[in-house]
Image 1 (cartoon, rainbow, N blue to C red):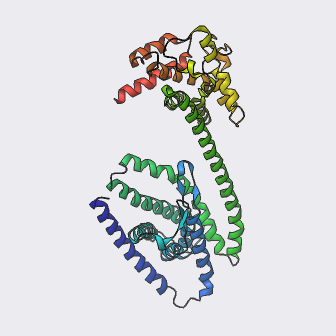
Image 2 (image 1 turned 120 degrees about the horizontal axis):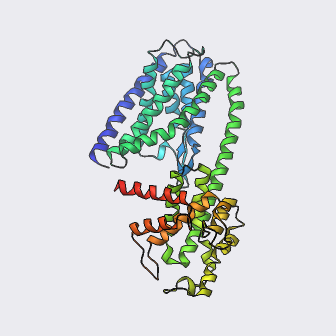
Image 3 (image 1 turned 90 degrees about the horizontal axis):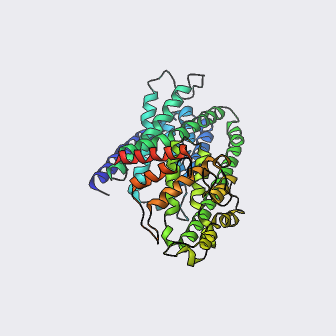
Length: 426
């Protein structure tokens, strides 16, 4: 960590802790003459809810975590103001446990500098939006619609932006992220945070009622069940990814000359699919099909697979069985029909002269036709035991030559557009 980062951490910690001390003082000054029974139960409940949300974040794709403690902080702000929101978050830190590398850790076994910075970043993200909302003709505890929607929106958006900008600025100062990536990171999570905003408003509304805590618990139970179902889905997705990786590793261990081939084909196929505006579902199928399309080579003899010279007619007939072998290998692990078709038919041709079945392009899915072009392109430009790869210019000519015979013309045009785009970047 460089000097700028350390100075930034110190500055944020000083500002945040100062705001925290002032907020705590104002909180206790505001309690004079108010009995604990009027507010204590709600605040303790929100502290517990905040701790639970922080301890059990929603795991998104690519191992990203979404901390929904904002719903408890927002509810505290709407009910009692920003000082109470600060108290709720700081107090929840004392009972928040996070899983890190298989072990649970809390504020007591985290370094002091990191703890102060993280807490200060959140306090700043609560206080500044709270001060902005004081400019509105609204007071905490006022739930008249639609007026309450404005402070709800302002507080939610600004709290999220200040929180994540505080963290992203630290990464930027350390050289770990560029401004463009900062914008993408904020944009990628904004929709999720805004989707949680109505929950915070609903909880604050329920807690304003005499039996609000019980009503809130009833509302939260289905949400916890939905979170558990989502976790099961993500676990299944991870196991599926591990299975695909194991298949690819097994395949590349048999044929070292094709190491990286499946991943490169997947990347080319993805770019072609994007150019052809394929759906997200098609993109997922194309990626899986690209990774597994040559899995059947596991069942081909090493003498044929690693032969440095040209294959005989009999040897070609044997190696042309690898698509069928591939389907036999992966056909019972729950892959979609489109992925199985890609494994089985990636050597079919547009004119029906391919193998193993001699299917015409009209009988094949677009994803299979995309894979065929991507696979051929990487095969042409990669070195093999019996020949060196050709140049990109020669590969372009071969693709043009194969339009309407070996390849789908529309897919070839998309691939050429991808190549043009890459050359333009260079």
